[in-house]
Amino acid sequence: MAWSYSRAVEYAEGKAVSMPGTERINALMKALGNPQERYLRVHVVGTNGKGSASAYIAAVLSAGGYRTGRFSSPAVMERRECITVDGEFISPTEYAYCMERVAAAAEEERPTSFEAETAAALLYFAMKGCRVAVLEAGMGGRDDATNVSGSKAAVAITSIALDHTEFLGDTLEKITLAKAGIAEPGCMLYSCLQEKESETAIKMYCAANGIECRFVPPLKPLGFCGGRQLASYCGGTLSLMPGISQLSNAALAAAVCEGLKERGFFLPESAFESGMAAVALPGRQELIDGKLLLDGAHNPAAARELAASVRARFPGVKKIALAGVFADKDYKGVLEATLKEMDAAVTFDWDNRRALGGKELQKYAEAFCKTRYIPDVEDALKEALAQAEGGIVVAYGSFSHLKLIKSAYGRLAQRSL
Image 1 (tube, rainbow, N blue to C red):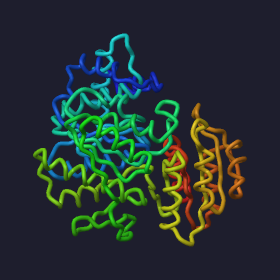
Image 2: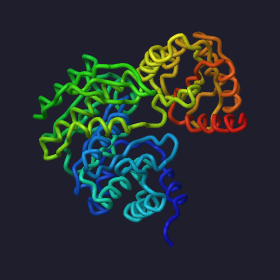
Image 3: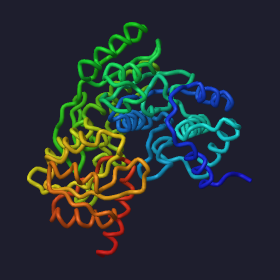
Image 4: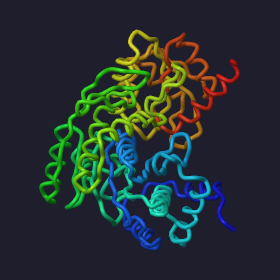
């Protein structure tokens, strides 16, 4: 009997551990017939902004008429959002079919959750006849499961910061080299502007391996319209997601797509404009009803970007933080970067083995602003909305709890009708 979607999800979630290395995924893909060798690949690595940059690249290619797959992680609202073709989620039936194929090919060697979903995505893109696939690396590059055999058209590096130090190293140089290591001779490497230590490491890696690299400056901002951020590009205007970093993410994506023209892709300027205008990702400064802002900022660099964007986007507006963080992240740095911009904060508890308890989080938050701890997510959100008094509630600290908060908001909104 064919697998159900629920069984496929259960299998995919069955080994939720981080195990760097490509030996397992390459063996798995070989057992599947190496479907990833049937299309070109664009890899996106970095610490922050990978999801946005990969979405922009994929959207431009799709708008240009090329069937394009995109693999990203983590899922924010719906597991199937990790695997898309031309912006459409993989269907539950197709997800189940691909995951069943992966399980059969893996036999006794059960892949990690990330490896299983990566393999399913690579198989799916071949099934759908994709010309190119845009792959967002998990946390590294060289040893990431997305770094399987096959043709790489380009590598894009978004902003690099200290994160996943237990796996990638405790300096920017080590982290950068781990991420840049996904690039190979023959593919072009593009990077947004980096800290000096990371820039030097990228240049050193590329020089040692005969790889051409280009550093891409951010686009020039032109203000906001209808909740979208406008930017100047090639004499025209691009409509982007809100957030200062999107100027860099979109510039990087545009540079990659321009480079793909040299590999036979015809992409008119209209594809850049219509493609990027269509990109809207959950949990990336996602504004709901003008009251609730959702963002996955989970490290100090992303938190600083969020704080700067909130300051510029909502001047003179009362701001209440709804914060939840992982205990194994630099949550003190996240709080320091954001809470100085907030009028008050509310913390809560959520069901995740990595989550820092709301009561403990309150202790740290109190150093920056008045903070109240309310265990239940829905009650905490209700309190934050009441405190905002027509202002904005900023929910952040991890992608993992945003679905809970958005669902809680939906229930509160329904009751108020």
